[in-house]
Image (cartoon, rainbow, N blue to C red; front, side, top):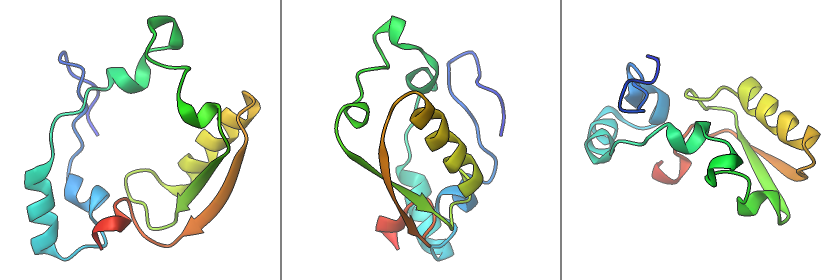
Length: 106
């Protein structure tokens, strides 16, 4: 993974293996062609910018699904994120799924 560039995007090497690891190669190629640029600003700016803090999952009962086959965000990282949010007062139910990053495609 390369650090965010000047345009605020993040480049991930071998992205198809991270996002589509449980898909056949031809489906990985097709889905890669559908990707668009996503700015890291949406993930890094605080609520003081008006971009974070009002997310619905902070306000209503939420289920977090841990994806065991996830290659882009390993389960240990997912657990760390959930624990951080729980320390901040967010309550999660949870479930575990064996699929990877994009289970709805498989």
